[in-house]
Image 1: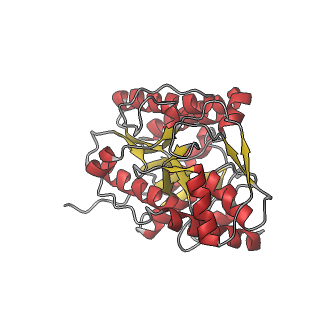
Image 2: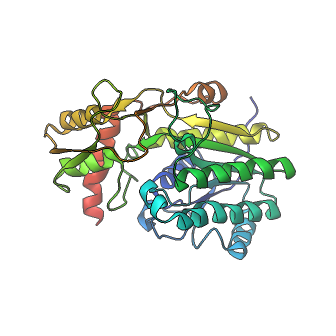
Length: 334
């Protein structure tokens, strides 16, 4: 196989949870990398030494043009955006602005500058409540909230722009991202985060009094919702491999699920946290939340057959152990 040319990569939202892990993965693999982040939800401490940070907004076309020129940007990894599903229902215009309109501005700036490769942080929320699980990439996309729609609209834009311009792209549809960098260089740092494993390790360390279990009457083995949890570092590795695939075949664009194809229920996750910490978490049983599917598990066959992706952390206890280590470090950082 020919050696891939490691082009300079601009990571949007690189001070955030998944973006910062992508920066680490790129840097570890020897790619030149820079970050743009407005730091509204990102953290300056999440950006490694030696990585240029442009504090600003992806809607700022002049800033983007300057970054592309200064860095010689050859690819974009786009993580910037808003991600809280209930908030998207309460404030849809915020999500259509941050996730859709700003993505449009970024894609326009990329095409003007001739940036040829674009990796997009998409989501399993584009599927809505699928009738069948595991979910393939051909499962009908039918989002049930503005967050899912805002991401699907960006996928549509990328498809249309790719057909009209010299831009190929990869949309990676994440399932439930969890865990932290194994070396505790970054992790989920957002205060008041709603991700189950983040909430559970906070409770295990006494930062929360309890964990709410929303719904115990789902059509699952123990009645609680089943989700496919993917380690954030495995997800970051998939982005680097996807970028290599785009560079290798510039006429090809890709859309792929990112998950392990194995689901765990809410109670199984909480039992695992109890097991890893040797300390039982206080659980509060509550009613279902609107729109939560019984089970949401990926079919990972496409990514496995397209990329040489070999997950290193596909183990629930490992994911929890890394999340716990980061949560302890976060107490010191604050």
